[in-house]
Length: 173
Image (cartoon, rainbow, N blue to C red; front, side, top):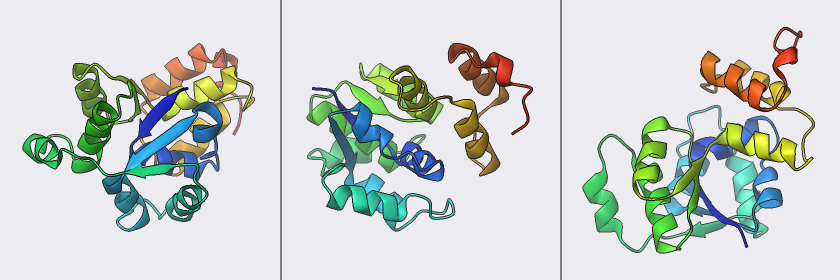
């Protein structure tokens, strides 16, 4: 059974492209922390994407909100990473889950330091394509970029190459 703990930015990004369902279609159990839930449903400054989608997914039992047990360790590490990212990493450790969905590079590096396997929204899209849940990733990457989701040009091009979509680079949107 594949379990995962997800941070807020991938949920917001998947909501932007109307593909939040990929989380529970790809993974058997999806967890978020209380802080991630609050960030998205109450403090979301990114055009409020994901608020209603997340509430619905939680109410339907597709995403589980987890309350971390060791809050002191999270408090002691706040600095370069914010509470949501640290709670995701701590929740994965407490739940004995080895995969986390985090986009921020510093948070991904911290997760790796904690022997976790991070994947980001692009990795989710690549996996969804591989599993036949979406036909291409370029369309979704373009939408994310148009909506202000930060994806570097290098990562964009590298992602299209991995997805065997480099011929689509010069196609009109």
